[in-house]
Length: 331
Ligand code: ASP
Image (cartoon, rainbow, N blue to C red):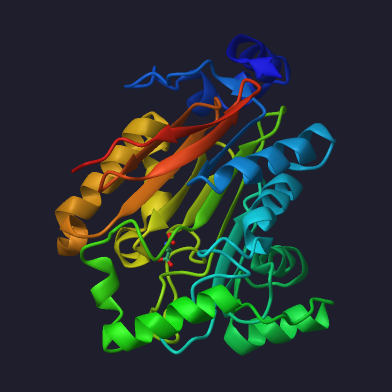
């Protein structure tokens, strides 16, 4: 593990300071200093399912795996957990009872891959990675994404578990088939994407984001998570960001890209996440009743988060500690 001084010495020795003067050398002191000693490798991810995901991602990096391997393997943990109601197997279905999954991944080379409206596949993040590595495209949707997955050896599974089926049937009885009833008074329920960002000990970053999307959404609805720049963005020269919550608000402001661009202009990860939330407050009227949370990490391994409503937390694995942190909120 490297502390900040050793890390800066290391990138300096590698020529990064002279090669990238505008990026590394002139990075200003963060507006709000992080409350931890900055060290790499580091992994940050959304919500409490981030704890086991971070653990796995760190294990992969320590075992010599690449940072892309780490983010993919990390988020596969909640994807494969049938008790996790917002990601992969056991994800909450749409209002017609179908589990439809969205995922995206970005590597340190700037490459990106994503799938959306994908059904019957437990690990959409691994399909997204194959889109990134084996096709000339960035995003495959629906039947085409499923066909691509099956051609590449993925197996079909029933993603609706007995528990999620039971909850859905109860919802159908009470909701009048109206997805909106869920979100207005319970902004922290019926969703919870895992977005995960990792930095290896060379200072290279990758990110992954995967979700079953908003519970009881309209059939065909796709959220922010598979949209590069909305649910996830990584620029290995600057840092990365990822989002959770009501995807529509994130898509209307291209939130993760905005966070990274604000870091490029010198904001700390914390300040950049806060400003992206403030942009939503300014531009999207639904901000008062809905949740959005951002997490971010910059090229120094500093991290930050901010959300609209109280109740968003995230997992940070850094300095040999993997812990939950409560995000500050706008409201
Ligand atoms: N952002 C996701 C979406 O809108 C929801 C979530 O975070 O769970 O699909």
